[in-house]
Image (cartoon, rainbow, N blue to C red):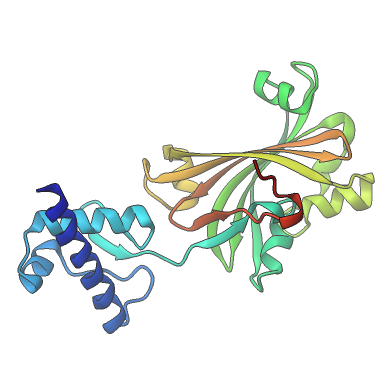
Length: 244
């Protein structure tokens, strides 16, 4: 029976996609209600619900409790190899990156930050939290940590306009060469949801990155990314590919 349920769901997914295309629905525009779609295609509301849930998981649709289902915006593609510089990565795609500073302050390193930056527990750390935007839309919430000893006075710069990495290069002679990144799927907290204009519990990617200048650790970043708006890709150079 499950096989036949999936078959019906597949056909409804095709029908929904055709409905979106024929009616020219744009990002953030609503679909008809489950009841109306059920009547339109003479299938159960459960089948409609299953198809919509699958399309939400695939990133084609998203739902808002009490309001219905909507066409999801096209996802921004983040190539992991290009993420040394957020601004540079999106400018290379012809898009306009932007930043809105939430806070910049000096804090004492906790265990997680101290281990990531390879400094002592309690050492002073510059903490810069920003909303990163692409073409005027909030994409991610980024918190950067850099040991104060490596860039004293960096808090005087205005990072709504200035690039953090440009400041580090020009004023401190620090050039980021590579980074280690881990990404996992999670759910947005109330605070994260407020900054990203999403609902608490919505799916987000949690990205943790350690950036190096040569072999020296320079920055630890924790980033919360709206999963509806982003997909990750990995480019593998043939010359570096390893075969068993």
